[in-house]
Image (cartoon, protein in one colour):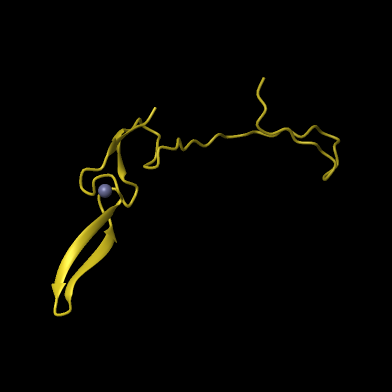
Length: 83
Ligand SMILES: [Zn+2]
């Protein structure tokens, strides 16, 4: 289980506002928060095997057994089913 916390750098808005004084007045430029990459949230706890977006990246090796005698193109594969 991944828990998130609000990004304090941008106030969980995901964007940073920067006021720049120019000759024409104040210009507000908005940039993506580099701390949370615009997500507004940061990972609080991340279990091993979970990437930064909170998704579990897991690769399962699937062994597909094709019965002998089945011609190519004629086999029905049941992938992802477990008994
Ligand atoms: Zn942020």
